[in-house]
Length: 458
Ligand SMILES: Cc1cc2nc3c(=O)[nH]c(=O)nc-3n(C[C@H](O)[C@H](O)[C@H](O)COP(=O)(O)OP(=O)(O)OC[C@H]3O[C@@H](n4cnc5c(N)ncnc54)[C@H](O)[C@@H]3O)c2cc1C
Image (tube, rainbow, N blue to C red; front, side, top):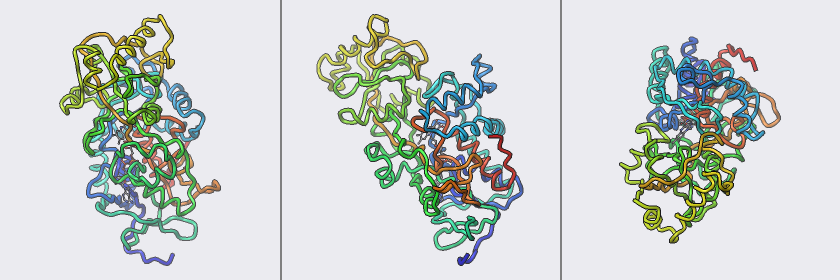
C-alpha cells in the first residue's frame, strides 16, 4: 500500500446507526482496538428516526400475548414477501441469529409489550422496541469496552493491500484496520443521483431517512468491484404527510386498522392490505401522487398514542388529520368530486358485508389477515399522505457471513457490510421490522467475521 497510515486500529466501523453500533460494541468487547467513524456530528442515522418495530419470532412477548410463531413461519413469510428475489441464505441467517438481537434488547431493557401484525406478516411479529434506549445502551457498552467514537468524520474511500481491505481514507488521512473494515453507512434514500440511476420511477417520492443516507458505503465498495442486490426493487413507503419534518416520525398505516385509500378523485385504486412499499408505488401513479387514508370513528378509537404507525393523536396535534360529521362533508373538505367519496365507501361497505367481491381483491386488514370493518360510524376522518423514500433496501451483495462479494462472486477479504447498505434480504417487497432486525443481527455477525469468530450455521 502506498498511503501512509496515520491512525492505526484493529478494525474500523463506518457509520454509527444501529448496525454500526452493534458491530462496534461486539468488536470492542472481543478485545479489538476499534474506531467507529461517523460523518455527522451525532450518532443514530435512520435508526434513531425509525419507528422501532423489529420482526422477531418465538419471543417471550409473543408467548405472553398467546401468539404462536416459529422460525419456520417467519422464514416462509419473508420468502413469500420477497417474491422469489430475496437470498434464502441471508434470510436463514437472519432467523438463525435472532438471538443476537434479543440479547441486545434484553441488555438495554428496551422491550415494550406492543406487538402487531404488519406488512408481510401472517402472524403478530412486529415488536415495538425503545429504539433510542437500545442505541444508547450499545453506545455506552462500546465506549466502556474501549471503542473510539470519531464523529464528524466522513469516510471517503476504502484502502487495500493487495486484494485485502485494510483501512479507510477520510479527508486525506488514512485509518488502518488490520483485521478489517465494516461498512454500516445506511442506504441511499437521500441520493437523488442513485435513485435516478436505479429506480427512476421512484425518484418523485419525498426524500426522507437519515440525512447521512447518501449511498457512500455502496459507492466505496462499488469502486472495488462489489456486486449489488435488489436495487431495482427499491420503493418508497406510503403513509407520510407531505409536510412532515426531518425529525418527526409521522407515518400512519390506518389502512391496516380498517381504513381505505382513495385518490384525489375519491376513488379506491388498490388492495389496502398490501405492504406499504407496494402501496408506495401504487400511490406514485395516482393523480397528485397522493392518497387519503379514509376511516371512521371505530378505526379512530384504535389509535395508540406514542406507537409509531398507529398514533393518530400526534397527527391530529400536528393539524394533519381532517374530520367531518358526514362523508359528504369530508369529501367537500378534501375537495373531492361531489358524491365520489360516498359512492366509493358504499361500494366498499357492500363488499365488506359479503354482498359483492372487493374490486381490488382485499380480503383482510393487513397482508390478507384480520376481519374488515365497514366505513360507517361518524365522525369520519382523512389523513392525506404521500410516498416517502424512507429507506432503500437494495445494496451490496454479501455472503451470509457479511463479507462483501464482487460481481464475479469472489469475496473482498477484509470488507464486511451490514444494515441498510446491504441488499438481498427483502427482494420485491418488505416485511415491517426486518430492516432493524437485520441491522442489529448482522452488525454482530460482521464483527464476528472480522474477529474470525463467525460460526454460521447456514
Ligand atoms: C421514518 C423511518 C421509519 C422506519 N421505521 C422502521 C421500523 O419501524 N422498523 C424497521 O425495521 N425499519 C424501519 N426503518 C428503516 C430502518 O430504520 C433502517 O433501515 C435502519 O435503521 C438502518 O440502519 P443502519 O445502521 O444500516 O443505517 P443508519 O441507521 O442509517 O446509520 C448509517 C450511519 O452511517 C453514517 N454514514 C453514512 N455515510 C458515511 C460516511 N461516508 N462516513 C461515515 N459515516 C457515514 C450516517 O450518517 C448514519 O449515521 C425506518 C426508516 C425511517 C426513515
